[in-house]
Length: 313
Image (cartoon, rainbow, N blue to C red):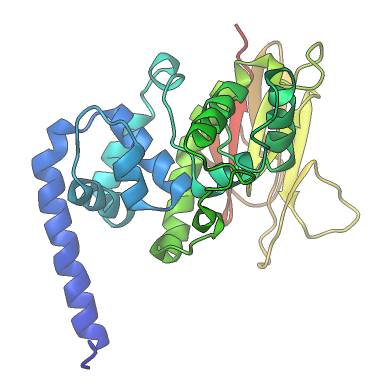
């Protein structure tokens, strides 16, 4: 069995991308910004192009090839990716809040552990416990209503764990071929994160203390931080005597230090360190300050911090 050399493999990859770009250009007018949001969010959550094709309700019936071509362009073609992300960032909350992201196999497996004989009076409590206990496995905006609907469908199909004809093959987790694309996919995820935060920031029922809500939310490396005070300090770990509210690992000699200030209903970001960092791709130099707005992406060396102000109506 012959194998391709590195040059041959590179040439093959380039030709595949060229085909994807050409096909995507032909299809460009068919995809809405909402379709692209659904595509990116669903792929990042499901990690399975075929499952996305089967379960996501786009504005029109795209083929698996259409989906594969557009995803490849998002990952590897900078101009197309930038254009698509720019369109997505112009979406309003009304266009996003009712979108449905399909359940992953892992989510269904966890929901299926709730017994089929569970009575309606306690079902929501069981689902809430499951959602809280395994929050990292569930999509960030899942609701109890969605979980209840999924559980009912699994029960009707005889797929709950305690049902005799449950399909145990669903329990096995599959490693998909998208793993080698994680770095770029994480960047896309970070760009979409403000929309997911905004959904959270408009629903105070998500917070334990509903009478004392945070001023803002920040997302760093899959962790969610709440800003309750009027000042939040962040920086890289260099001096063990300096404590930050949010710290970043640092393998270089470059030290970053900054703060976010909340004053009179407005947010400001200040660089009080010795080196520059980026706010929404604009450079913020030492001893400079800038209005932050209601959402922003702050780049600290190789790290990305997503800021979202609380905007409860």
